[in-house]
Amino acid sequence: MNPIDALFRDLRAAGRKAFMPFLTGGDPDLAFTKDALTAVAAAGAHLVEVGLPFSDPIADGPVIQASYTRALNAKLKLGDLFATLKQTAAQPGWKTPMVAMGSYTLIYKRGAAAFIQQAKAAGLSGAVLPDLPVEEAEEFAKVAADHDFKPILLVTPTTSPARAEKIVKACGGFVYVVSIVGITGERDRMPVAITDMIARLRNLTDLPLCVGFGVSKPEHVTELRTLVDGVIVGTAMVRKLEQAGQPGQREKALTELKASVQALVVALNPTP
Image (cartoon, rainbow, N blue to C red):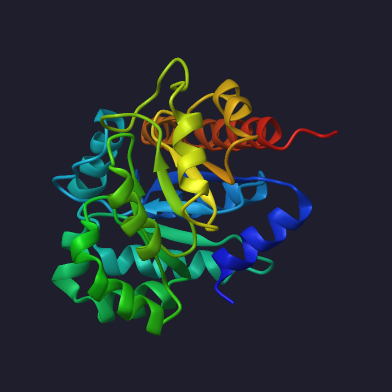
């Protein structure tokens, strides 16, 4: 069974929800990527999204765009990132599923089959594809199915019901539910319309529904926990990567990253 499917099966059986931090690969460097992945897993993260830096991301806000730029300016190569992920997943006791998040352009350049084989060898179980239209997802989904690799597409507040139905049918692992109109980033509160959006999607699919974009605080997680199967926090995590690149801040950033994950996990799954 794919690790993502196994994770949500077990969480649903236990009545718990998945906390899923997003970390840019290679920011500020690959050694910190390994340390950060290890730290968030130890802090209770259930699944980690690893951002594949790209020069022209379409869905990311300024904090994540800047993170991608730092990694690319450091001459990050995708093969080196995959090698770091493989080392991370090979650590004794590692059980945390990882998925890539990146532009389909990166996959297209490599070829779907080659990318999926390399990603799986690196310990990735799926890929979030924010810029892949559902009309063009069929080929990737077929190749992914052959390799038990999950294609994860996005549903937004402006997605029509007919299109949402196509998207959830093309998804595997979980559906990425975008809570806001626009790019990633921190917000003061979650939109009221998210409740209706989740209800509509529940009528279309049994796949887990995981909400991202604009989720950054324990209060957001508390608002969402009864509605969704998981929450994704990116910008608040990536700020710690920026901090880690400053002189003398590496260990402090790692400690604060771990504490932030612990607080969000508790907010999502409070002890009865």
